[in-house]
Image 1 (cartoon, rainbow, N blue to C red):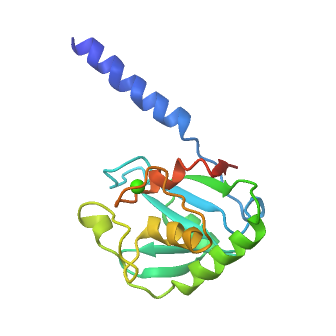
Image 2: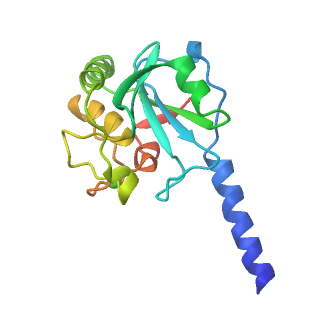
Image 3: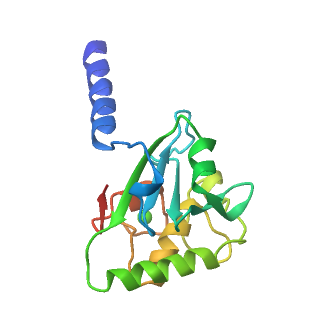
Length: 173
Ligand SMILES: [Ca+2]
């Protein structure tokens, strides 16, 4: 029984790692509107694989952290801070009006800078109902929603980074 259990657990871990591949991020591979997902090795997310995520606005990311709220962080600083974290990048698929959608999302994300952190993300379940307090997944979700694109792949009142990662409207780069 123990052997079976261990085999199952190992299989699950292998599948997760194989499925959610990470990349070495360099600025010249990114486009504005890309979404960066961060897997911290000692990550605290209990609701999925990814612990943190951010919106690439060109030169840096708009992100929400529990100590700064919504902020703009230069890309090198963002990449260096959590090293050696695993990072994946996803991008809005080709769709009608894609350029306008991304521009609206950028404008909205930047307009969110300065808002306080939504502690539902660290307390229990990251909710998406607050417009005044924003957590990391909500930064990205609200930006694209303002442009008419809902990236929450499973709907509901909660919003984990994984919910957005698995959106069929995004593709890996
Ligand atoms: Ca959801």
